[in-house]
Length: 298
Image (cartoon, rainbow, N blue to C red; front, side, top):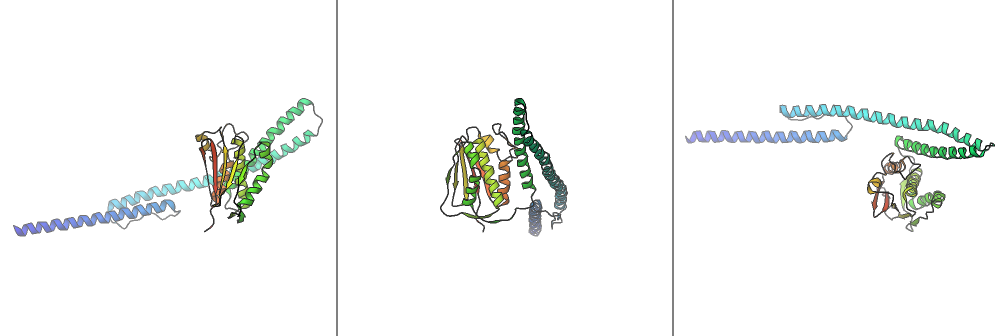
């Protein structure tokens, strides 16, 4: 009896060891499949998920995941191709529309030199105003399409954020004065240097200032910190938190913001990201704050 018990115990022990080994191998196979799957999701490769396990269920799982990856890769390719074609189409259309619009503006200028009745003069004034609005919107759309379709950022150079910000404010002086806005500007005494593209940086600042003109209650505070962070702050009683949170969305406009495609801040965010910076906004106690930060290169 004792011999039979020992044999049975030994058989059970061997069985337990085999089960533990099987579980270990299954765990390893699951980990392999998981790591390979996560890697395939973030890398653009045709390599499929493989496993060292000979377990039919594990190999069936890997085969099912590979089939899903093939479909995902196909849909991703279709999306990228469609997105590229759409960007190219927007760029071409916006460019084509600028040519006849420029001609219309030219003929409006010629009409202003003609002898017209008072009623015709009023009509011409309306046409000139609407044409100007359309020209501004088309320019904004064209700038956005070029920005998102560009293969890369232009020439980068070491720039003083202080100087570029001052240039932007000088260029926007007439607009700010027309809106009776006198910005309060605070900058450090030393230059804050960053390696950036000057044209893109000027566009970012201009679009943020334009946003301030649209939504400000009449005040504007601009602060440049030693860390390379620039704060644009103004009271915006016309905005709700939901509306403020969507200002970076493409084509989103608040009803009060006329003459706008809603692309200004979206362009600013795209350009900031292309130069390795960050931009965000918040609305607290009625004060809209836009933060732009460029960290020094490592």
